[in-house]
Image 1: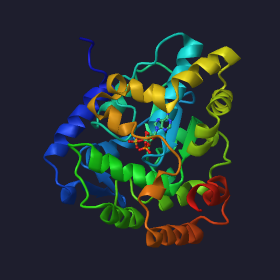
Image 2: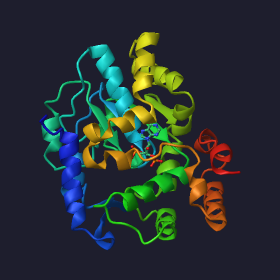
Image 3: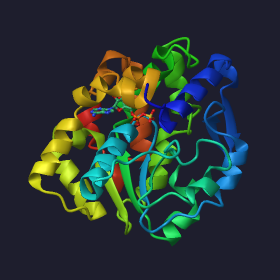
Length: 303
Ligand SMILES: Nc1ncnc2c1ncn2[C@@H]1O[C@H](COP(=O)(O)OS(=O)(=O)O)[C@@H](OP(=O)(O)O)[C@H]1O
């Protein structure tokens, strides 16, 4: 049997810890943001300051459930296409997850290193900016994000469940979920989406025109690929293709992580009152901002 990847090894350990963790003790707070004790530690956050980014690191930033694994797959395939070397994850790719020694080990990893993160913009290690690593940030509409987050908790047998969608919705709106508030995350990123070395993409655009978006991602990272190569990567990056392989790539959690992959699933769970509450929150926090426009809220969250 093939050796377990670092990715699956880490996920399996987190699931094991989750079995013994009640929802009420799932989170610890670091610098005002709740994180799951099953994946993050205080010591690792302290050690994060020692992380030395490189100019050729590839940083993939997102709030949970916005398509992090999707862009990780796409970018890994792009790296593979240009280097002809399969990108192996020497560590669990989420920068802030794992033991506190990981940043020392990472010093030895060859470039380009692909790092994913759910950290809010102002919590990212300063060396990422100082050394001008490129950051691809993916956003998804907040209603589908919340629904995906809820299902992940309640569908994966070992992860602590909420008593109901209504309970989860309340916690999501308060930002009392892993990696904190979607809206704070968005507000934090809003001013930086047009910064040098930052590229914004929208889950819904990726869904609508995968090939064109992959081309743009390749251009952003300076990867030169033929139309044919882009087409091949696009075919391998559809929801169906990724879900079919999810057990091999992500272990037991795979089929739960690649759950539905649709736009508009929120219509199956949101009540009218919840719709109004989120629309109001969006209006107060993001409407009229650059990110607010980029999210195309009216198209994806209303009607
Ligand atoms: N290829 C492709 N096409 C469309 N949608 C996709 C794809 N890959 C992942 N996904 C969907 O992304 C959701 C999981 O998001 P993340 O990978 O960010 O999750 S995590 O925060 O890292 O756990 C989760 O959304 P839901 O299906 O709505 O739950 C995944 O299905």
